[in-house]
Image (cartoon, rainbow, N blue to C red; front, side, top):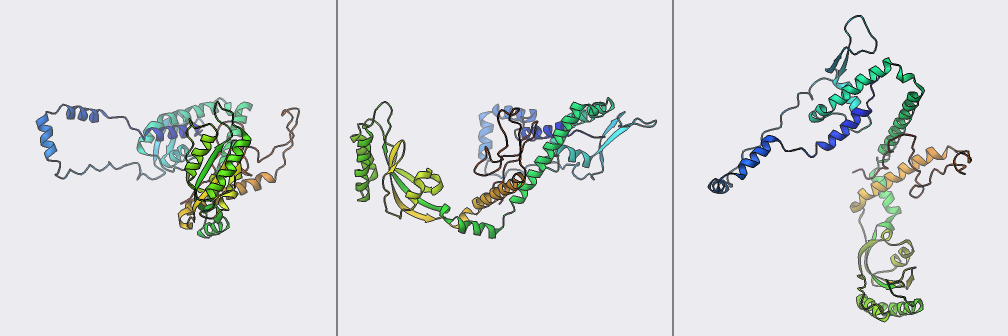
Length: 370
């Protein structure tokens, strides 16, 4: 008998979330009530004895189900069988079968005792309804066959992507070192200050030519070691913005990727103590000063590199799969679309996650693997 495990698996996930926040038991509530009603003298006596060693907490009771062999029957459904027989009719589900079905599609392989108790009823209901549906021939109906086909497509797609994620996460120390050498600039950090001269201010018109002239003059003063804090206040005053509080000039420690793209190279080309030229941005003029620069050691970013390498390997594998397929669409049916761009909607050149009709999300691209 084919058992649809979708509902039990969903119940398992819900039960797992609920178990994290257990409701207060009656015994616990009674104990709290009694504690609150104790006389002050008794509480004081207990306070005085706090120095004494507290008795050890009782050990959690052993799980008798854990030691059962996989072929042990755990659910018996009498008067339920796939093929009616003259003798006894029953469906027996073993521990191994139960755990494989309710954990299908997840990384779990076992089921906690509290979870078993929560999901056994909905699981058994699915088994009974599945058997009755087959007796009625519902599995032969075209719409049901389509639903089963989509479920199979979705399951295979997700299993494949889960495998790609797992394989991509197998990053060796040698690969980490090689990536670090090739991208060492990405791990250079600079302590920087920034002079901000706005082109736009709420409720006020700013003369763009005047703002640019101020920026160029103050850039020379910044290069002469004048405080950027003072220069920024001066710029706001000269622009008639004295009533507004300028942003802090202290940008802290940043990496190149943490700056806007147009500002990355001009800033990180500077040595410690140097000041950039005026950088013209649609909203403001900027002048940067680099106070210090350091390169983060490989050991400090190894986990970050593993994540980057894993994501690239995953993206490359997906790209190799999608790039071998050309999609041709009927533009009359798909609103003018003639083909599919597998990279559309994805970050960089990462292929968009494969999807099929119906519910279900594709696995998340891999991150770090300690």
